[in-house]
Image 1 (tube, rainbow, N blue to C red):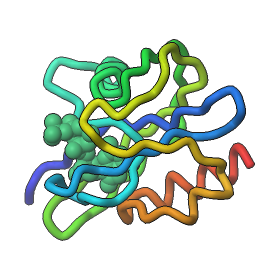
Image 2 (cartoon, helix red, strand yellow):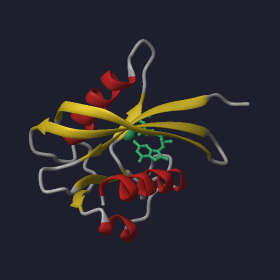
Image 3 (tube, rainbow, N blue to C red):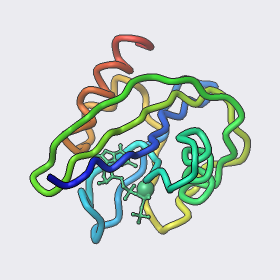
Image 4 (cartoon, rainbow, N blue to C red):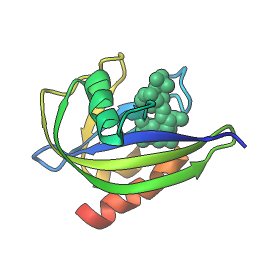
Length: 132
Ligand SMILES: Nc1nc2c([nH]c(=O)n2[C@H]2C[C@H](O)[C@@H](COP(=O)(O)OP(=O)(O)OP(=O)(O)O)O2)c(=O)[nH]1
Ligand SMILES: [Mg+2]
């Protein structure tokens, strides 16, 4: 069995209630799908540290306030991920894709229009249930 990939994922809310999504570069796992920004937790790092680092690296925002939302474990054919998902309610900076990826701010109702990796359905359901 391969080990579980621990991923820090941020559902970033802007003051107007919109959520930040980004399109995964084509060459990556789940390339071309939309995601909530984040990435793998490195050895010796807390999940909160990983989330702050990834959001700065990927979309140039500095997290100021976060709270746990849910954990989603999902088996893909080639790997198993644990999406350790946090709600980000305060941040500084203006989001921009630092890796040439498209980003968008979308309403909760609009999330259904985008194609996310399969593991994300549980996150989207939780967002709708908690924040709609
Ligand atoms: N960031 C993120 N990853 C997701 C989501 N949904 C989902 O299945 N994943 C999967 C895809 C990847 O297998 C894994 C995250 O890896 P990643 O490619 O973002 O990791 P990373 O930013 O650290 O990138 P790298 O250093 O490996 O290039 O989790 C999501 O909403 N956000
Ligand atoms: Mg990433």
